[in-house]
Length: 148
Ligand SMILES: CC(C)(COP(=O)(O)OP(=O)(O)OC[C@H]1O[C@@H](n2cnc3c(N)ncnc32)[C@H](O)[C@@H]1OP(=O)(O)O)[C@@H](O)C(=O)NCCC(=O)NCCS
Image (cartoon, rainbow, N blue to C red; front, side, top):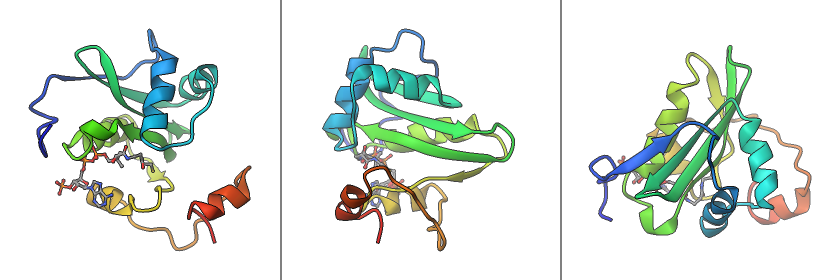
């Protein structure tokens, strides 16, 4: 897939958890280099989200994302992932924009994977100066470059 052709492809976005193959979600997260768990854990996480997005190419899951929110003024993005062979074609932008559209007038925060900050800058995000996190696997997250 060439750059910026996601909009021109027959990519289907679904914004419901109905009928989702959670093993495929786990596989997309895994292949994209994200944290991944048993499919049932992802089902619970996505079903507990405020809104979700899944991208399909001819029935194959190729990307996903979800947002947590109070539905009023605060929200956060998680699990934004695109299969490697589909990256760099505008699909990540489509996923984030679909989630943002469903978040109305909320402030939206996230923690970017190291090296992905530029992607979020392109979408209007700015680096936090006072962001703090209490991760379960604090040492591992520090090793991966998320925290001091
Ligand atoms: C990060 C990710 C979701 C981006 O999706 P993508 O489909 O590759 O990105 P897009 O093609 O939609 O890029 C949109 C814009 O961001 C830019 N961009 C993408 N990745 C970037 C990066 N790492 N650094 C700087 N800019 C980047 C693109 O050049 C493009 O710019 P343009 O609109 O001026 O052409 C995808 O690369 C991915 O799944 N990575 C692995 C998992 C991951 O790290 N997820 C993020 C967790 S916070």
